[in-house]
Length: 267
Image (cartoon, rainbow, N blue to C red; front, side, top):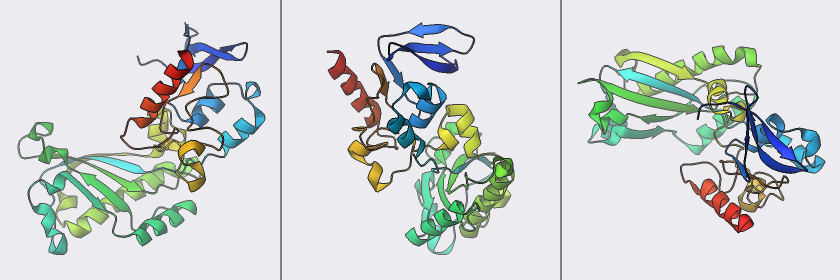
């Protein structure tokens, strides 16, 4: 169902469904949001209907979990050299990470916080056509790359330029270890956080739905007092996205845990 939801409907303080773009209303006994908590409570609801301390805490959620992703069509596989040459073996190029060190990740984050594109980006790199050759024409390859951290707090008017700078640094980084990489690129598309915010509704394009700070773990996710984030101050409204415990990653656990919370409440 590719329909935009405009707001969560409430009656007598309880969630009763949603209103779609165009005005159609869909009612339900239970309403579940897999958006992040910020998008749900500040974008789909009237803040005046929520406890002041709750909405204040929601607005403090850190949505700087932003990155740039590239989809790339390749003429040939990258050939890694020197100490990285082991990646040329077997199916190693199906899934790689060029993160170098914890210190480099920290430096990238520090530059991002100051509104700058990291000078030496940390890159995740997958070439799924190594594992499934039906994903690309014969002899060619399809790849995806993502890099941390994108300076999402920089003025929005600068994001397009920053995206292009970061995309070029991603290519530079891989070419440093696989010299044929840049010349092997046939086509590429680069996606910035604003693309993901538009496509998936996640605040600032934050795939984590709120960075995992120590004070926002387990029962304190996404904010203290949330008990994991599945239940909300609005009866019959539940959350099931990565803003819930245990957080982001392809675990399906936020949805699993949310479903059990709902079953407990409606039993």
